[in-house]
Length: 260
Image (cartoon, rainbow, N blue to C red):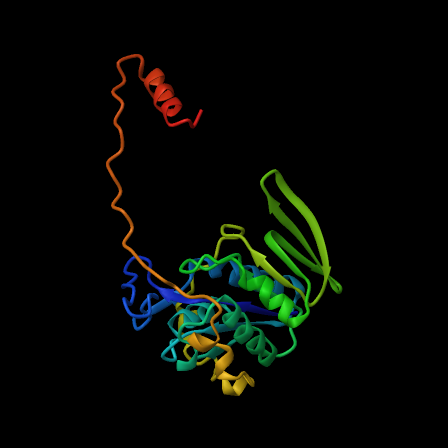
């Protein structure tokens, strides 16, 4: 079984950098790491390949400045190779532009039985890229997967819902987005880290994928960020002294907020 996993390399949430006041977007001229939400997809893919008894996991990513730090982490986990799209023309790409690039990169990666993504990235939260990739590639899409099994030419998914989960099936190849926490991502071993340094990363540009630069980046974006502002500082919470009637004070407070 061959599985392609879309992974995003993002600024470290512990030190995310800053927003560019001119472009109103996140500055990405910093060291990028593997988005934690994508580590679950990588682990799920590795487990599926192990269960199948053969095949490989290929990574697909889009990042500036030929950044491979996050990719090397996923390669150290056990992925076999990666395709990295890095091009100045991609700066300012919206979700649809990103989907167009990733769809072409997935095709370049070779025939896949399954394409796995996260539900949404930790620095964008649009949650639309997986479905857009599926539409562009003409593939079925299943979202919010909490478990995945592939039997023959069918992918069987437990799709998480508010009430539990739905059993959903689709023919392969298909695009499946997984929720965070569905599996416990493995830690890269020292052997895996050393091996990752020599695993192939196919770095390509927009032109290499046959995409017109006017379709992506600022030129192709269908959205515009008009204004950015710093988030309000969090205020101190309300401390309830328990004098034997603390529960009632909490109930009264929640009632005042119209929570109950």
